[in-house]
Length: 189
Image 1 (cartoon, helix red, strand yellow):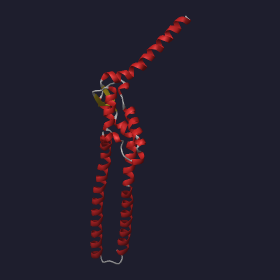
Image 2 (spheres, one colour; image 1 turned 120 degrees about the vertical axis):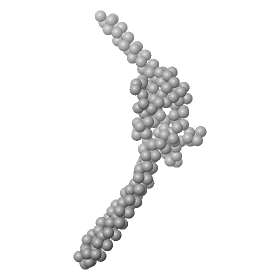
Image 3 (spheres, helix red, strand yellow; image 1 turned 90 degrees about the vertical axis):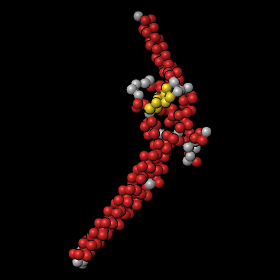
């Protein structure tokens, strides 16, 4: 009975070992790799640094909006105070001018916010353009013919997923070159 349990345990261990060893080989032998682009972008330190730099650059926009809002509030309060001393006609003209001014500012601010939002959305595209050499490197390493986006695949073996490896390589290169705040030299190869 003990001998049978031992043989059973050894058999299970060998099967587990075979599965562990065979999975990485499946990525190398399949010719197809899988990457979760969203997870790569969200988890990469390089992408986070790009987002942080963008947010820092655009922090002044929030300060600008606050200053404009405060100035408009003061002007509105002054207009309200002036109402007591102005004739109804003059007050109507002043109120209309203030409303036109506010509408113009709102339109300009919304346009600027849309521009910033578009620039933020392009960060993702820029990130993937800048890490393209890493896709090539991993494809060569695994002798792969294609890398597919994970979300477009119904089912695959986890060993085909190179997302963590890609993020690790990009971030290692990024951290090595962080002082220059440039993407690694591989970009120019």
